[in-house]
Image (cartoon, rainbow, N blue to C red; front, side):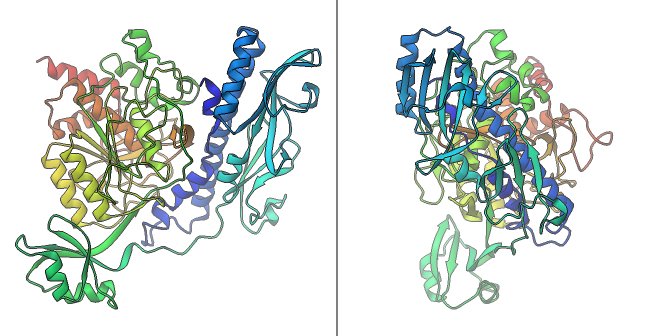
Length: 605
């Protein structure tokens, strides 16, 4: 479908603001958090604005590439005409395309753009011209053109999807200062001193648009556990339903000897007190909730896996976003590591998250089955977006000229839907997902989720997977606090903090003596439902870098135990911060080249 197919980019401001919520509203009650810190909020707003700016630039660059190529005359006219028709048929966000020569339209498709080239008044440094956004037939649109007044290509782009993703969390103004997309409740006073709440303003370079992000007043903390529900671990000989009936309760869900029960009219506290001395119960806990982020559209397109075995290709893949945007892969030495291995089909990586988009053109060639932990079936479709983004970082289809490169090229992905459409899940859904992954061949499990609650149920699942020799990787959290988050803080898990493009600790990254290593976590491009790509930030993005590396290590030497993989990742990391281990970077920033080199050396002994 060429490059137009990837124009339906979503915008990460909404995702970044949800990222703030990840541990702030749903995960943390401790007074040492950053919930009420104005400086922290302002920094998160700046991060959101920067990620949105990068995503918009990625969006515009796709159409620019084709317009410039077509205007150069390198594509035969008849081929262009046919391609235009295909693009319009496939993608409703492209309303119309035309080629004009000496005032005559000689090729067109869809709704013909009505303006002429001279009416596109905003010229970029590369010669592309843009119109101001406008409304037509109830939708916001924009024109883009390449060429000159005598011969030019022009496209009319539907901006509705931008509005859908941005309008409730940010505002966009065009180069003339006119707001065309935004949150109507935002205080967009032109004087920041007069604004009711501070906001962050950022200009998108070379386009002239302004982004306004305002986090607003802090929402009250949501529940950290489902009220009126308790998880009990029963003795092996106890039948859960019969036992619950005698207690005046019902079983909602269960996993092996663990069951979630609810009793009408009784609170969680009352249930806990009433069952604490029951001889049939070995332990009990509230039904803790965990979460992450997103939203989806229907996806489309097919993946193309054209991975080459040539050394030059392996060190420099041709994916369109690799060189201009994926600083993260170079920072960890992925380009040099790929000369040792690009992964192996016998080493699956499971992503316990909100699922994944199985039709995404940069994922479909990697996904080899999955699981829905809520419905106990194979419907792992991502209704949120976070899981799709995380999966792409770990193992997007690479060297296929499209989209992004994954840290692993060939390791199969096993998406596990343990977070729902709101990116929320319980300790049971996560535990069930972990157990399924361990039982279905996962050699590595990524957990870009967490909470400050230590769940015995989830820890049991972690121990189960660990004892089956699975490598477990988890994100440390995004609140700039030292409070341990679980599952990252479990001793069986490798905990990952986040660093910036400058190899500095990300300001939001949690810290503590449980941190093992660090990985890139700011402005990370990734896949997104609907054949889209977005830029996001967070320790959720850092963790799949390490999961992808673990997949490569086990591809080089599948006989390594999980502890040996942990030792290789820690010992080959580049020291950062204070000399030696420290609670901010752990053992340092992962170094994929050194890790695979050490793995290969050990393999040859």
